[in-house]
Amino acid sequence: MSSTDPQGLQAFPDELSGRESWLEPFDWYREMRDDAPVRYDASRGSWDAFRYDDVKRILDDDGTFSVDPERATDYVEPENEGEGLILQTMLFRDPPRHDELRSVVEEPFRPRAIRQLEPRIRELTTEVLGDALDARGEMDVVEDLAYPLPVLVIAELLGVPAEMRDQFKTWSDTLVEAASDDVDTQAYLEDQRQVQMEMAWYFLDLIEDRRENPRDDLVSRIVTAELDDGSRLSREEALGTCILLLVAGNITTTNLIANAVRCFDGADHFDTVRDDDRALAAALEEVLRYRSPVQAMTRIATEEVTLHDATIEGGDRVVVWLGSGNRDERQFDDAETFVPNRTPNQHLGFGHGTHYCLGAPLARLETKVVLSELLDRVTDLRVADAELSPTRSSFIYGVESLPVAFETE
Image (tube, rainbow, N blue to C red; front, side):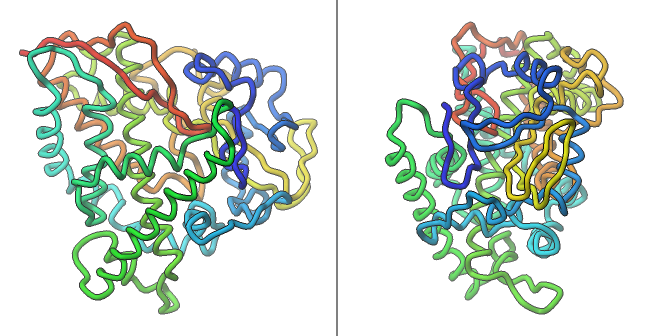
């Protein structure tokens, strides 16, 4: 699973290259926090930061630590338009351009707007559960529940047909996938380019249609919204934003749902959160700390900076390990224990600072609705005895499959 893509955005440390090590990276995190809180990894050409305070500082300092890959000394120009589309989004732009791009879609993702979606999310969840729960008393949480529901929700918001959900999942999984040692690098890169071009052509057609026939959906908002200066998003920015929302709108929530089931099962907390929305909400914040769906983010140093005894040069890549910061005993009491009612809980599960996750309110609501509806319908829920495989990504954390058994009332 160790690899580096052309932009260095998906670089896997050798220490996490095995299946078991990526399923449970937390012992390695602890070792790094104690012995090498900031270290340089020559095999990946990047620095790593592991402690909570350092991770938070880096994420909070846009001036010193940029998200723009073009500022890296080893930046490689994309070979084609499709490959560079995602780089046109708010995800890889610093303020003030980041703020302008985010403003186009920020309002529909504010907590008040998201709360209004709850009845529809419950309706969709009921439909998905109707297909998933059968007399066998078993299902795959990822395939049958955690994957289809978020795709259905983000598809409706964007205004794209939900019948394409299998295609959306394939595209999303490919874009966040890290190359593996047993896969030809050129074949991996070609798959990446192919998927990006397929998405580009799909959304380009949709964008042109919405310019002519706008509807009440996110794609229409993206292509028609005016910025403060009266301009609109460029064609490339509109395409990139559509792709970003589709991918981020389902990948993060899928893994949050599955990670929650793993956490609750391991500590036998299903009954603790059943029929108690407040307890469930608090427990989900602990899931975000304990098994965050996003374990790492990349920044580029814009100038020379010293962290601990390390001198980071301008143009160097710095990977901040959110998953490690969230287990830092310097910040959290009994950090290696899942505490469902932990308070305070200032975790970094959705990032921090300017680039704090736009979709955090939606991910929280979807996960809360899915789990509450599931627990209303089943008892004795338990993860089956199966060998788990981690997601094939160097920053997204979850499992590809999660078989569970249950009793229906």
